Structure formats: structure tokens, C-alpha cells
Amino acid sequence: MNEQAQTTQAPQTPPKPAPKGIGLADSAVARLKQLLVERQTPDAGLRIAVKGGGCSGLQYSMEWAEKSRERDKVFERDGVRVFVDPKSYLYLIGTELVFEQTLMASGFKLNNPNIKAACGCGESFSV
Image 1 (tube, helix red, strand yellow):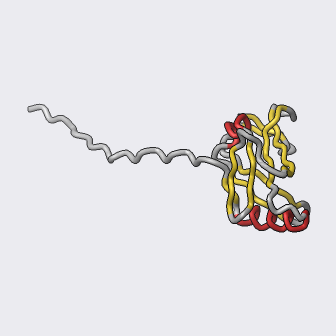
Image 2 (image 1 turned 30 degrees about the horizontal axis):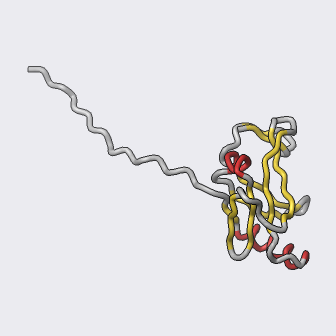
Image 3 (image 1 turned 180 degrees about the vertical axis):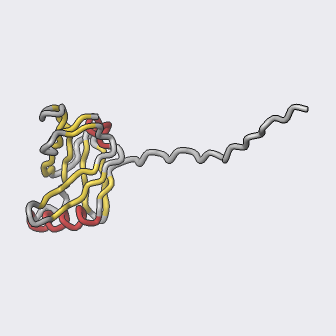
């Protein structure tokens, strides 16, 4: 009599969907609100872009924008707005904007899950 080992597989959980859009951490929202008040431009927003350059191939660009452009993706939380052009958005899907303040430096940081490699100085990346 031949006995066959039966194996049962645990049900597989489906993979989690990738987060969409650009997330704004509490620290980023608070700092952006403060900067908008100081600038006296409550309707402006932060434009985030990805451009070619740096030692790893791509780098971030951030600047103030008075309003969004026609094809921009607009992300808003608590009255704070971030504008991203469609091409840059492809590199930024699932990214979270945070504001960090340490003894050595302070500034905005993008926690981007799409990065495959980054340079030593942290200013450029590749996907």
C-alpha cells in the first residue's frame, strides 16, 4: 500500500496594494503651514519634482508655487497643498513628505519607497 504525503498549504494573503499619491506627515504639514503664514501666501503650495542629475541619476527639486499647473497632481492635507507634475509623479508614487529637525540640520525629506540606490551624500537616487 502506497501512502502519499499530503501537504496542505496555508492560504496565501494577497499582496498589499502599493500606496498611491504623496503622503504628508504631521511634521511636514505643521512646517508648511508655518512657512505659508510667514510668506503671507496661504493659497500657495510646495512644488516637488524629480529631475535628471546628481551622481545617481535623479534628484529632487522643491520650490514654492503660487498655484498648480494644468496637469499637476495636487495633494492636500489640512489646507496645505503639494503640486507634482505627471512625469515626476511616476517616481514619487507612495512617497511621504516629512520635516526633520536635528542638531545638525533641518529640512524636508522624501521617504520614497521606489528608490533602488542612492548616492553617499543622499542628494540623488535611482529607481
